[in-house]
Amino acid sequence: MAYQRKEIDIAQVQRQKDICGEILGRNQQAGATPLAMVDTYGCQQNEADSEKIRGYLAEMGYGFTDNEFEADVIVINTCAVREHAEMRVLGNVGALNHSKKARPSQIIAVCGCMVQQEHMAQKIKMSYPVVDLVFGPHELWRFPEHLKAVMDSHKRRFAAAADEGAVIEGMPIHRDRGVKAWLSIMYGCNNFCSYCIVPYVRGRERSRHPEEILKEARELVAAGYKDITLLGQNVNSYGKDLEEDVDFADLIRMINDIPGDFLIRFMTSHPKDATEKLFKTMAECEKCAHQLHLPVQSGSDRILKLMNRVYTREKYIEKARLARSYMPDLVVTTDIIVGFPGETEADFADTLSLCEEIRYDAMFTFIYSKRQGTPAATMPDPYTRADKQRHFDALMELSNTISGEKHKEYEGKTLRVLIDGETGKDEYNLSSRTNGGRLVHLKGDRSLIGQFVEVEIVSSNNWALYGRIAP
Ligand code: SAH
Ligand code: SF4
Ligand code: F3S
Image (cartoon, rainbow, N blue to C red):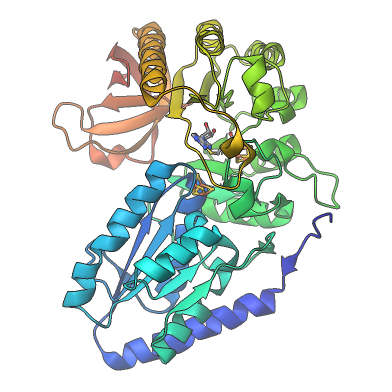
C-alpha cells in the first residue's frame, strides 16, 4: 500500500509541551536543578534529533552534563547503520550499571534507529534491565509522555512499534551555541539500497513544508548561525511528496534569499536524483557552499546494480563532471562501501579507478556490515574479512594520497574561511572551514569565532590546511 503522508496536529505537540511543564513543576519543587545526559551515535540526523530531545528536557527544567554519574536522566540516541555502531552502543549501555547503582533513581532511555529494529528492542528488554525506556525515531515527539509514564509507574516502557513516520512541527530544539546549525528538511528514505537499514528504521520519505523550513532558517540566521546544513537522507528528492510545486533547488534559492551573511550546505545527495537544475542553482546562489557530498558506494556497475543504487558508473561520472562544469572550485566527497557481498578483485579495481578519475577531496570508506532484514544480508558473501580489510586499506591509502595532493594545490592561495572554533593547540589555535568545507587551522584571537576572514594557505597535510590571516 502506498504511504499516506501524516502530519501531527500541533495541538498534540502542545500536549507534550504541557507534560514538560508538569515535570518542570515537580523539578522546581524538588529544589536543585536536575541534570540530563544525551549521548548521540550515528549521523547528523541523529544529532538533530538529539537537539529535540534536549529541547524537551530543557523545557522540563533539566540542565545538561556529560557525566553519567551526575545525570538524573540519560538518553542514548542510537545508530543501526553498521554492526560496529550497535556494538559500541550496547557496550556503553551495559556500563551504565555503575551509574545506576550509584544513583538508583536514575532513568535510562535508549532511543533511535537501533531500537526501531524489533530484535534489538527485544535484546534490550531481555539483556539490559538497566534500561527503563526504549523509544524509536517515530516516537521521539512523544518523549515527554513516555518519560513521565516511567517516572509515575516505575515500570519499564517500550515504544518502538513499526511505523512509516510522520511530519511533526513545533518541537522545541536546544542547539549548542555556535557557528554551525543542522536544519532537517525531510525525513526517511525510499531508496532501499540493498545493504542499508535506514529505510526500515526511519520510515518513508517525507518533506517539511517550505514555509516551516524558511521560518527555522530565518530564526537561525537571526540567532547568529553562519553555517547551516540542510539535512535529509536524500535531499535531492525534497518536495516530491508535497502538494506545493517545489523541489530542492527551489528550496535552496528561497533560503539564499534570506538576508544575512551565512553559508548553506546540505547532505546527503543521491546521485540518481542530482539534477542540472541543482548544480546551476548552487552556482547562482552566492550563499550556497560549493560542496557536494555525492556517495558513489562502488565503481563497479555489477555491484551498483546489486546495491540497487539505480545509476551506472558512467552516469555518476557524468553528473560529477556536470557539477564541476558549473562550479570549477566544487569540493566533491563520497561514501564507499568495501566488501559488498560477492565484490571481486575486478569490482574493487573499478572502485579504485573511479576514485582516481573523480579525485575526491575526501572519501568516507566503510567495510560492508550485514544488516538483518536487508536484501544484501542473504546474498552470497564468499570473501574473507582479510580480503576486505586489504581492499579497505588500499582505498584509504588512495584517498589520503589524493586528499594530500588536492590540499597541496591550496598552498599559496588566499581564500575566505569561516572561523568556527578552537583547536586547543597553541600554534594553530583556531579552526575554520573553507567555502567547500575543507578544514583550515590558523592562529588568531578567539573573538574571531563566527567571522568570515581571508586566509593565506601556508601549508597542508592529508587531513587539513594551515593558514595565516591575510593582512
Ligand atoms: N542517505 C545517505 C547515506 C546514509 S548512511 C546516502 O544514501 O548517501 C551513510 C553511509 O553509510 C552510506 O553512504 C554507506 O556508505 C554506509 N553504509 C550504509 N549501510 C551500510 C552497511 N550495511 N555497511 C557498511 N556501510 C554502510
Ligand atoms: Fe540508505 Fe540508500 Fe537511503 Fe542512503 S539512499 S539512506 S544508503 S537506503
Ligand atoms: Fe545511523 Fe539512523 Fe543515521 S541508522 S546513520 S543514525 S539514520
